[in-house]
Image 1 (tube, rainbow, N blue to C red):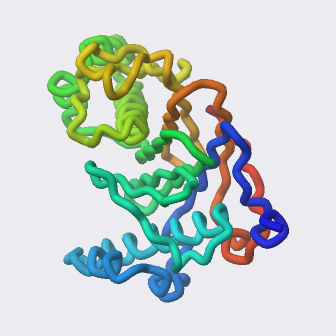
Image 2: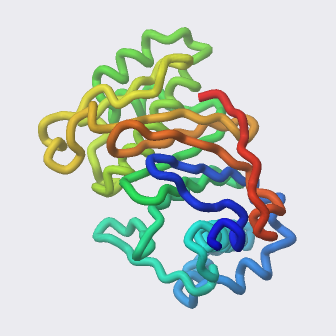
Image 3: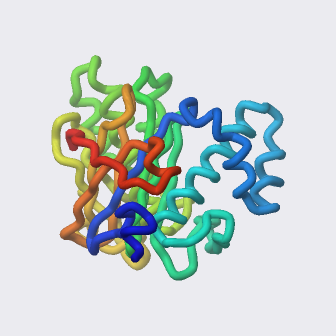
Length: 257
């Protein structure tokens, strides 16, 4: 019944499905998506001083509600989120989810259960990348970045950033987690991996081998990372389209890791 009513949005065990969207393609849905939001979400949207940022928030949260409604078999407007001590939203009864955005590019990761995180960034030139890495990154990451050819350092930096952010969000410790107390792989074309977790974090985050890390490049000129606690995970990607709003099954995207 769930599959028939919601177009195959069921979530197999140990599978993370990541939906990608360009919010500019959803501008025409602003009013109906706004109608799905709770009063507190509308209040948060209105705090932005620029209409463009308000609209982005509405589109992100409305899209999240539609997607989670499909996966959970519930009306999007009926969903009520809990917020943990670090402000990370969760849905009582599941599924697990995480949302990331970079300007108009959005990634939403969903799994039946588990600790998951996602981050997305536009591939671009990063001012002061060396200085940021010197100040905030793990010593091994900084060394690996400096070993890259200059023309690949921005890419390496953004790979490191998305992987670290996805790990932090999955660990659920909060954005105050010290970036220099754990390390991820940063070399382009090398497998994504958590390489080190310092002793100070192991009580909350566990050991490196407790984690799975993935890269996905789906939207043009972006890189995304997905982190999950445990092993044996599969990551599937989808593009948001009419199927999500009509209830039809969304096609899987073939994307390099």
